[in-house]
Image: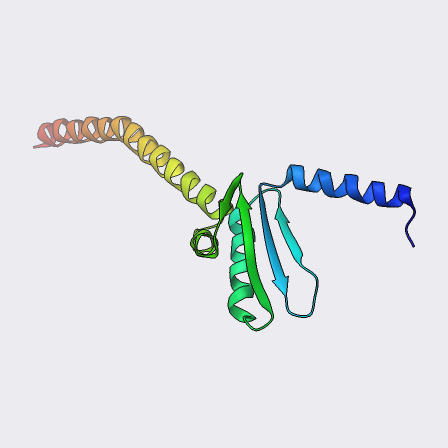
Length: 133
């Protein structure tokens, strides 16, 4: 049996976890006590996990309530979150778009001296070819 000090430590640890969480889902299982799923970083990842588990195990799993960034959400909203791409995927897409624009700028800027060199070379060839004739 846990001592009063152990219970207090457990309570403090749970309090810290709840304060750090950006999303929490209260769920129930048949023949088990109620459970809580927490996420400190990515509510979309938590929503995907909850939604997938709910679809795979409808006979033993029930969604009761959820909180995402301080707002109560329903199961339909959790499923909508689950359909979003993950944070990492969104960041990689943004980085690709930024990099793509930077590459285009470099291509345009490098084209000016390259084109100038081509024109100078062609002029030189025309003058050299005209003198030989």
